[in-house]
Image (cartoon, rainbow, N blue to C red; front, side, top):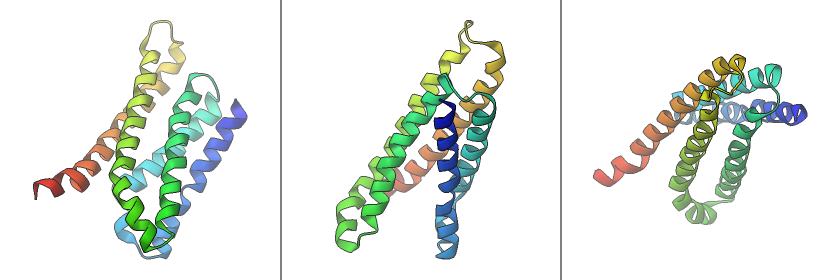
Amino acid sequence: MARWVWWYFTLKIIELADTVIFILRKKYNQISFLHVYHHTITVITTWIICKYVPGGMWTFVMLPNCAVHVIMYMYYFCACLGPEMQKVVIPWKKSMTSLQLIQFAIMVTHMFQTLLPSCEPTRKPLAYFIMSQLCFAFYLFLDYYRKSYLRKKIE
């Protein structure tokens, strides 16, 4: 299991490349606090898991994230195929953000088991840290969702 956690950590570092691409393309508007914070805290958290607890319940949190990223990068790939394909995939953009919110809810729900008395006490501080980060990420993505999709309906 530790090997898979290592590969996941490697993927999180590779995902930082999109920030570099945004900078090289001078797309500074896409480098939001949400983007930078999310990528930074994900790399840090994954490194902590990889270094100190590379297995068990911690690996489940990675599964929904990987699934969402496969779908998300397929969406980005299709959007890069030109204006015709963009017309097809743009309506799915709102659903991508919804999927990310669902992912965070699943992760937090899973992490609640660490609050059980039977959970090893030495794992609790890491669990509290990860749960707080997941809740904050949920808040940031929800705020993005509201600003991007709900506010437009009101206006």
